[in-house]
Image (cartoon, rainbow, N blue to C red; front, side, top):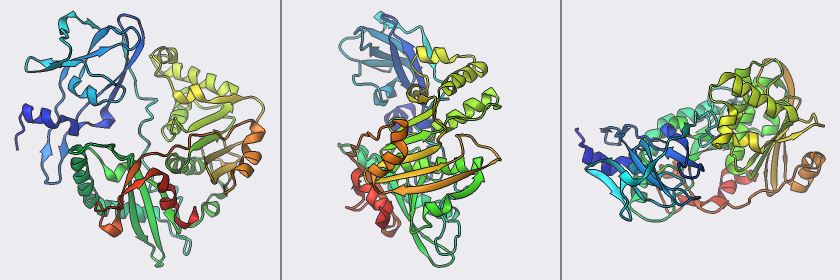
Length: 438
């Protein structure tokens, strides 16, 4: 099937590929203020009928008004017609691609507007909008309590088997949502029924952020958050294991805590170790960043660790860390990390009203083949957890308890179809996903 440009422009919004978004920071040519641009890129998409819709990416000008000096500016970008859908913009003033495709407000003239001359493209080393993929093949966290069989491989196989059905229902919901007004869901939650070889049954819950377009890959983007009726985590994470095993368990716990908990602390004197080369220092930090929610997470380290990160970053990059700070696209985690000089404690935790989960032991934040001690505990009394873990280090337990909005639940028992019970309030997600264990 051949699609003409006019038709593709009408459906361009649905072809947005979040993974290809280009984050630029520009300097206002009038007052030198930093302004952020999230340049949108499209990708081909295959719809349920098996038809592939091609991408459409066009260069043009985006018109914007600086919030500080209130003067207009223009910047050359990909798909300026889509920037009005990109986050960070409260007002739309205009765009120009060609003589047949432009739009301006308030009598604006493109020729009279000053063009941006200074910009910096974020190299995405600190991109934190999307989490890493969940590793279903290694470092299992969920086991059958009856026979100790690993469950994550079974969950992944079930997901692959059902993904076309789930995608079809997701696609139908997105198209329905685009035709109606109202707020979108925050997350998509998938509930799968899993049966062990011994006959034991489980419910596996997976999630990802809701995306109002058809470019989704459920097999790789869904994150496992809990498996009901599985072996308790304090019986899995207990004993002596390699640093690599411990860190990969932590990545999976962070995926769980990001979704279900309100506050996350990573307390470790060191990130990496003193013999790591510069590229490995940066890679160790940035891999951790990709599993953290910046609105919930705080890293506590020794004072020299933050300086060491910036020094290592400068050694391996043409754009220096100070330039990123200048354009305000440096790491939010480095900026908000707390440094202390008198501690050797190592623990990582997720905190919520009425439940705190903590993994603690002898291991710093670093992968490796050497062995460390690690344990997992659950506290159902926040005051006890605070007194035993946070108070000695002068850390607080304040967090935003706001859980407004709703998410979309696709259940295997309902053949993943949308029902009156599919839209669930976010404040109910914790109870639904933890079941009788909460």
